Image (cartoon, rainbow, N blue to C red):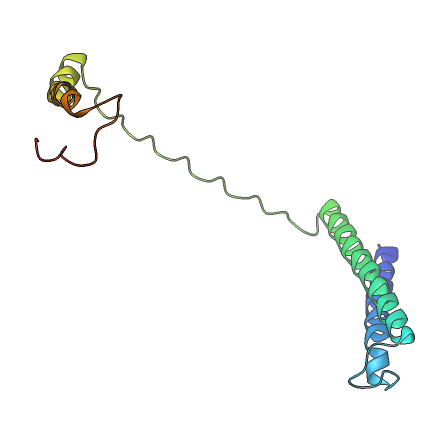
Length: 137
């Protein structure tokens, strides 16, 4: 357990060292203001970024290992998630019988049949003329 704490502290120090490397050229004045980054600034900044990322990953891993150790020893109790309540079934709508459906659709079928019979007078080669179709309706 002590090794994990030491590892966590070392990883946290690596994060701090990486952050210092990233800001050092600006804090110490080695990077001129309002100028492109020098090669030294780029080198220090990106080296520091790498050190900080590796240290952060290490710190996260060590903290996870400490948490697992505490759970294994019974010092930390893992809370179980509450199961989500099952949704209540929605009652199904009553099914319409085929006779009721035929009664409902009969006026629609008649209107379509009438429209097809009447529109044939105005069509040539399957196309209705743009003018005069509405006058006869």
